[in-house]
Figure 1: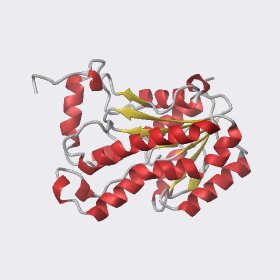
Figure 2: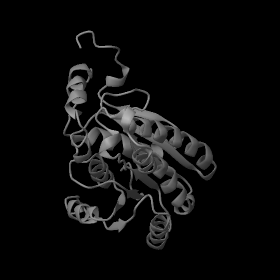
Figure 3: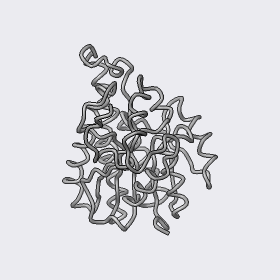
Length: 260
């Protein structure tokens, strides 16, 4: 199997409609052993949804904005496995006043917290887990984005954070490559996850996607995204790093829709 024997840490699993859950499900089906992480009051949600996977994984507490908690997870991974073959960064948050057409009025405090959680956290997580990944000899970090090249309607400062996330991945690919660690991002089309549905005007983007994606697109099935992430975690992608791969039904390649 594609991930037979791989040891993976997956963040961001809160509900069974999340992209992170789809990644964990596909990873287990492909032979990986998985650990999940949760934070604060979300721990109970992660623990509950973990039981819906083929094999119920343990859930470790980790706030990506807390260096001590990242270090504790790194130590626990080394204690359990002695190595870490892959990490999935599926974390993003922007305060409500940074979304929904409020770009010009969003205060720095909201932007700073959203950027730290959504972009800088990729560096914090990757650097904090570098020792177990180095122990694996070859490892992969994959993060989720929403094409930061464009100014999307209503996405506002989260769009800026995603652009920062993509740049962070490229710099990490540069600096971690010497240790055999590759870093890539996957830009998924819109999925009606809990996070997606919390974005004001989500349907505005979703409706356009359904009309323009040449392959079509499912708003409720993230399996294809999970499969691409698992490919990047596998030994079939050992020479791919610093890449942004779209799993969006081909939407990103289309020009302006004259019918809009």
